[in-house]
Length: 353
Image (cartoon, rainbow, N blue to C red; front, side, top):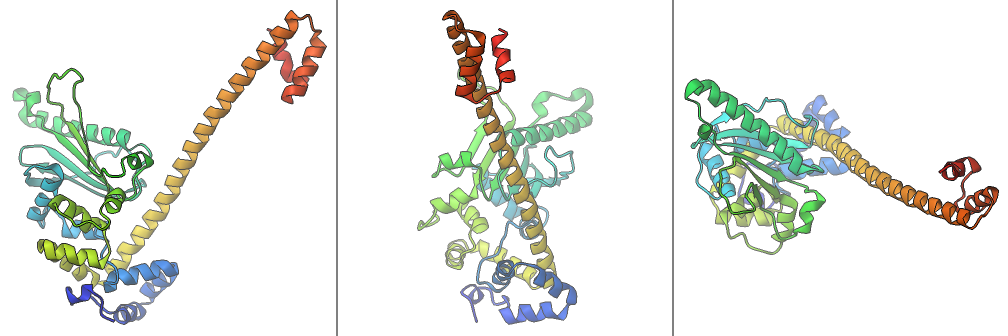
């Protein structure tokens, strides 16, 4: 059955074709059967145009947005996000020591040097970290130090700190932490250091955090009016109707989708990509739940400690009052045992003060 997207992208395969190719390979069939029913359906929907492509999957993004293959496309994307014309001159290795373990919730990471010498790191997180600010600051500092060491090594005695350029950390969050949801209509959060006195100095670390889930909610039943929002729609929406409206208004995005569906013609490759995403999502969801649970445990522990402190203060007060009334020690123990459900041994420490 033809889908709406197939009218625009004739290379999209029918469901029967995809299933037939999977059936030709025992390896692919075993992998396909190992997925949950809803996962199998999601995969088929992507390949057959029932739903749009997941362009933020690492395998898709690094093909369709690679700064080395399609520099103009990546330049436009970055320029729209930063609100200024930028041009990537080279892609930098991102093999420095990561602040977070690579089993983190990171699914895409590209580091580039811009024309003015600035460095921009663009990354995508499937599930936002519990403390994104701290992590962003640490990774930004790491990139800044790398730039400093490189330039100092190149310039040697002619080195000046004015040679160090800005470092941009741009993070797209598919599922953002709760802090972002306090601002349900805001989805571009730009951070930079400023003085509280009005004194102006050039500090180099700048951050842009974009919660895609909040963007999607805020755009419901609204037309995309800016190119910057159009890029976010491209990467966040899988609804055929929205995608069709988008490529009709911005025809250059049609080529991106065509390249994505060219990739889908290689079923084995797309299955590997999909399997990797499922694996990362499962692992990351578990880690996220552990972090959330630890956060809850820490909060409960603090509450318990506060209650214990308050209880101790109350018991000390009662002991002093009863002693001032010349109540015998054994009677004091009996009364406190009865009120607080404590043993005599536990209460004796309060009597010793």
